[in-house]
Image: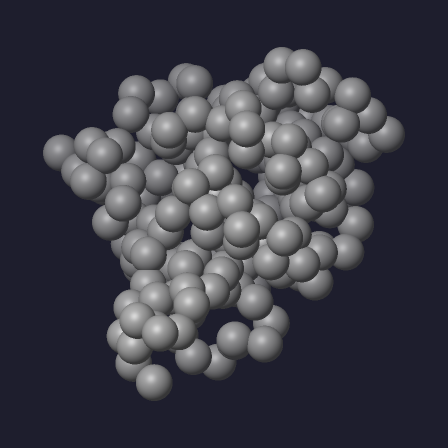
Length: 200
């Protein structure tokens, strides 16, 4: 069956939010994906905003389905920059190239929206993959607004990092976890931080 794919804000596809919660919980069992129904009601057009990777069958009789997720967060110390987190693909759909499709779609979407930079953090074993996709390693984490509210980033047991402003009204969701220091981030203890230039 031939299919096409798109990234859609979760608030525009409310009937697929429960599928997104399942995908996130399968990937990160301790995450707070159950916050999504309430969270998407407050999200902005671009960021902070959770997006679903939607599979659209070419046969219109078949329903669209959610096969992945990514969340965009504002970077507040850089112009026209976003941070991407919580990228994952449904475990049952892996091996079909959907992770690469999601990465390409997020870059295309943000370039179309005139963003200049895309930041992310990943584990050391993904370093060569992102370097091969024209990402550059950063010396420090971006200063973000409301990152890791879903708790999908847990390096060193942390729930946040130096430079992340906690999402207003949701501060209690960060309780019980450590905040990574600037030194821990710079030393690479919390993962590899990347940036990619998207446009001029």
